[in-house]
Length: 253
Image 1 (tube, helix red, strand yellow):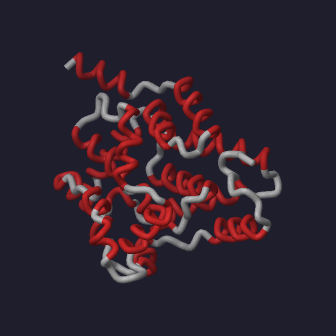
Image 2 (tube, helix red, strand yellow):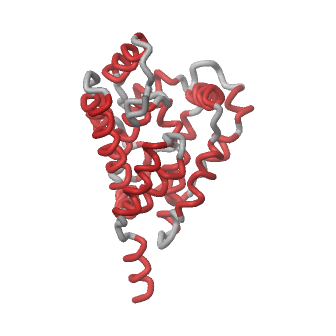
Image 3 (cartoon, one colour):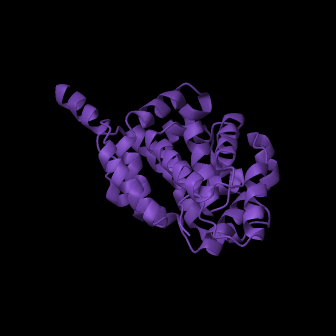
């Protein structure tokens, strides 16, 4: 029992220097997705354990834990998703992935170097993987695009729904960098809108999102209580109209 307690303590230890180095590498190269997982791992503390405890308090969350539902195989079945009617969640998801040239498997590979499962229980391992696997699906559900501003707003949404020090730290650093680089953009308002969306929406980790893939996206958003992120959309439109580089979150020119 003592060894298990020590293992849990080491797994939950916060490593701020490691996180800072990874954030700096991420700012220098926004495509370095593996650094995101390293930041989350360095600062996660007991966030996953707390999320699992919350799941156990909700009937649908307990059902998910007991079934260990696996959404990744469904998200990887691009032919099946492509065959869904236009405007459905799954069809919109696969179109986004193909347009961006990314895959669900790519996130799995990017997370492999972060040693994410050290000291976690089986339930915690399952939830950590599920949160990773639904990242791009959350882009579709929330309306936040894969552009840097959309990524930042989505991270704000995510850490409001399921608090994680690592994600919160990335949001903080990106806001600081973006304010200095683009003082005319109300970056804080966009990020706060993401947090407000996270508070207004149903808690996604407790839902069988795989059951929504064949449903029309507007109907799903309505069921989830997800308002349109209008401030983000307006800011992005102004940014595109001015033909400025869309690197608000990273501060790149």
